[in-house]
Length: 288
Image (cartoon, rainbow, N blue to C red; front, top):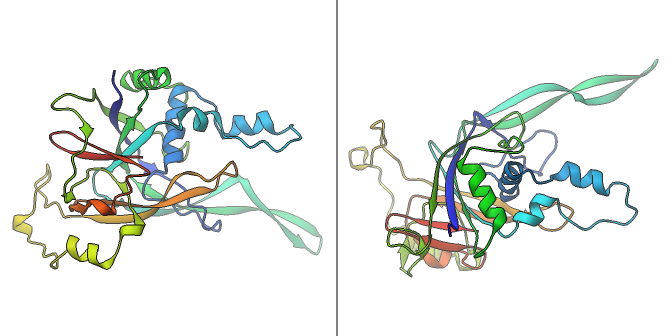
């Protein structure tokens, strides 16, 4: 049975709003796990936040539950590899909306004014997503795999906002256990991970950092790897407080420190309680 699949998603723009401030909308650089489960739920036709609210709005008791897509897809583990020139460039987009307005008091009464909305957008974001289930029989996962591989979606998936419809390409699937397929990784002092991974903050200290970077990094353009266009590929090390889910039904984000790097990392820095590592002959991925 296929238990691990991957595919690329891309769009002209992306917006994954941070809840830090509401005067302007800032975006995460990586799609939060709830957003990824949301786009998978749209492919399957599962109910989202709007339907969940409408179904429970008239109930007197306080409903402590999650939307259908959260409940039914919570068992899936995901992996994310940023593609292209990451971190992606951003722009500030300013626009008016008929749903954005405020009241201004005047001598003759009050006046309704249209408010400006300012949002930070990712330019041409592109990711490879990995999906994994540890269930021997998972009909929902099988249906999801079938829909993705056949480019079929019940609702339109998008990257953060329904203005930014995504494209799915390069679908791939792996049966675990083969000589060239993914399996549980073997312990090594240092490992190179293709995806982002969650950091074990309890084991991050100056000693580990000194072991990871024993000498200053010197960029030699002639010695760097080249991309498909012949441009030098520069090593990257990116970190972000990343939403791995919701704390509770209030839908506040549960944040963990995530890292994406092209360097080798010390295995003690990886949070193996929250996620798992799988490897094949060519690469290693972290799923959470």
